[in-house]
Length: 82
Image 1 (cartoon, rainbow, N blue to C red):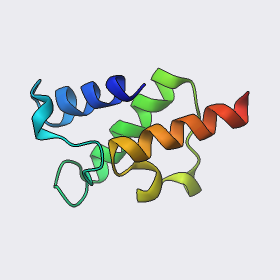
Image 2 (tube, rainbow, N blue to C red):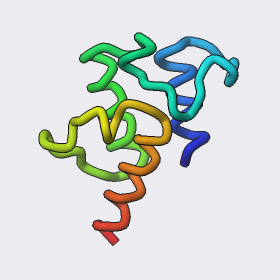
Image 3 (cartoon, one colour):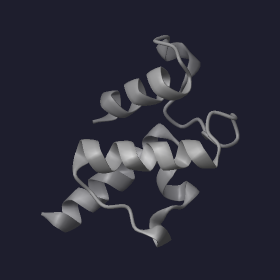
């Protein structure tokens, strides 16, 4: 899951395949990787890829602002659904 998310961020938001440009705990917002449109792209990606629904009240940096945050968020959503 982590590699899938990293690959998406690298390829679709950073336009590179170089894994050294993104650390798993880098803040997407602080690093200027995403803006509000990028947040929506990430949400659509994780909903389609991992079969979860992101509710409005879950659209928070603690859930969506780094590779590690995304992995933790997706795992928690999948655990609740199971």
